[in-house]
Length: 276
Ligand code: SAM
Image: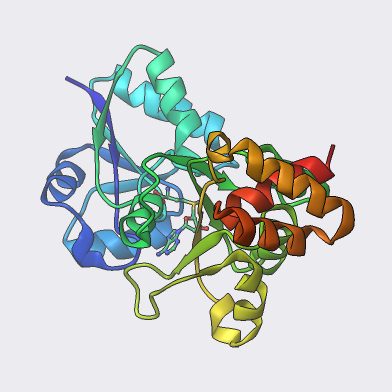
């Protein structure tokens, strides 16, 4: 039966290609790839000789039409992107939607993804996570997007490129509580792989401390907001009193010391009170 196979490829380390991914890539009639030159190197290294066609954000409509025409003619097609699982923050999703809409089978061939690779080594045990993907490029929209997820108690997962890592970290630290933990995972599975965990308020200084820190591809994982229900009424009363007299950070710290409640929760509540 003709089908579109959505095939995950390595993030960097070629050894991460799966046995099934190789079988599918060898067997299909054609492979649609985001960047054919980039993917040709992967296929050459893996001994796959299947023909490549381009499917990227600039030719998406026409290329999806070509994939549908081939499927209609009884061919099978694989979809790959530059790294990881297609359709996660890359042009794959719209092509998949069109192929589905045309009534053809779409088959996942799972494997690496930057988000799950980073989550697996972050050590956050909050349970859920919220995949945010790339933050907007424009400063106003970026801050609004961060504000929109500020109260989420799930771990926040974001993608970032070397061009905007500095601006994004600065805005995250400005909008969210600086005490929250951030895990910065860069160059996963590559030579210069690095995974650091630090308070969000220290992230900009970490980036500036070494020019190499701004190089490569990034996943940012940010501890979710502390759950609101935990704050007892007495802690809230003490916080209210201190906030009337002291700066926000000092009030939250002292309220935590006096009441024994979590400083993060008090800080988050103080921010809410201050913002009205
Ligand atoms: N579909 C891919 C996936 O499954 O992860 C993501 C595609 S998106 C266009 C590219 C972004 O993924 C990069 O900007 C970066 O945020 C993240 N990424 C890709 N490779 C990475 C790596 N080796 N280490 C860290 N992040 C990576």
